[in-house]
Image (cartoon, rainbow, N blue to C red; front, side, top):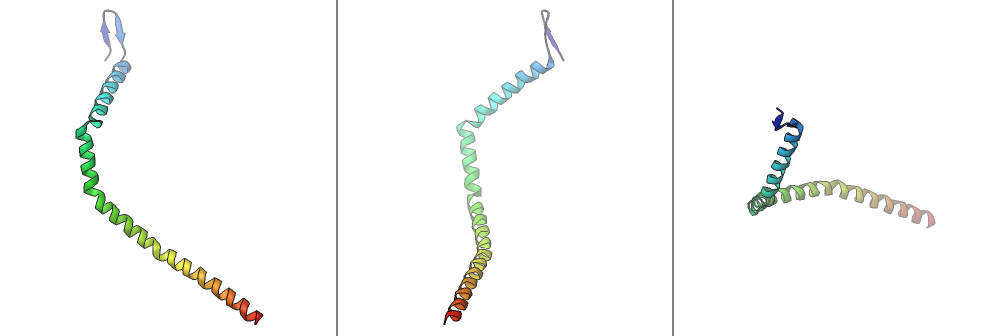
Length: 89
């Protein structure tokens, strides 16, 4: 839909761009308002404990395989040193 005002034609694209700018301006105003800030803060508090619990569970589940790898490497080094000492003695 083109708009013509006293022989000036405004293409649809220009109207759409102008409307997008207006919408973005109002979204920014709302996003930067105290109400939006308070809402985001409330949502973070609501999900914080479960997010921390999940992260701790993940870290602990990753710890067991790491512990096994460290233990295996230490055993390998100890056996290697013992073998070397036995050869010397």
